[in-house]
Length: 117
Length: 117
Image (tube, rainbow over all chains, first blue to last red; front, side):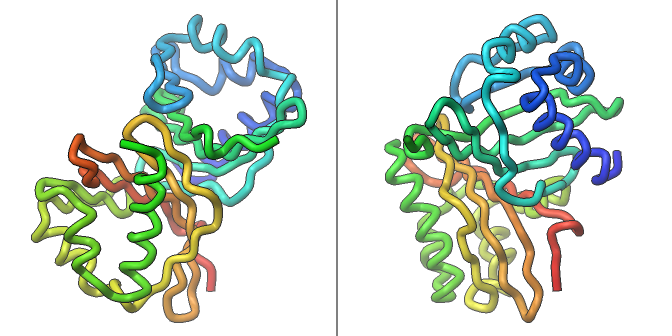
């Protein structure tokens, strides 16, 4: 998988939040993907659980990239700021891609220190 | 492990590069730690291999944090810029800590797109 495709996936993810388009999420993730957000919390596994996880936030919060995506191996890490009802959260997400170019693992790094009102 | 301790570890890591002090690296990592830099390349395992990996760069390149460290679970992800002989590289590192508060895994995310002269 080319780095340009990984970076394009990051931009589609940002667009999914901006437009509230769950089809982008469905297209981005592998059927058996895992989402751990934040890292250390219960893992959402499989498309149904993942869609359920995104439903409350998609189209309601906004993601703004705060630096260039970093591609390495089969993964990409990218820093962004979440803008949600007057509060901002600084986050770093890591996508891992499978051989089909679908995200098979998403891990979101953020903690209480990253939440600002 | 408290998030303040994880954030302090990140700042000690930056200081190790600024001062060229390998003792900081030795103190930061667990004896059986792994370093994958960049992600996807061969893994350096164990203190001896890790010290050997850092020897050419410690005290010679400079790390500047480009955002707040993100603590989650037993891990911390942090964005920074490497300043090395007129070239900059945007990197995101992820430290994972063991029960003793030592870094047991370091993974560095960066690719050719993140190198600028």
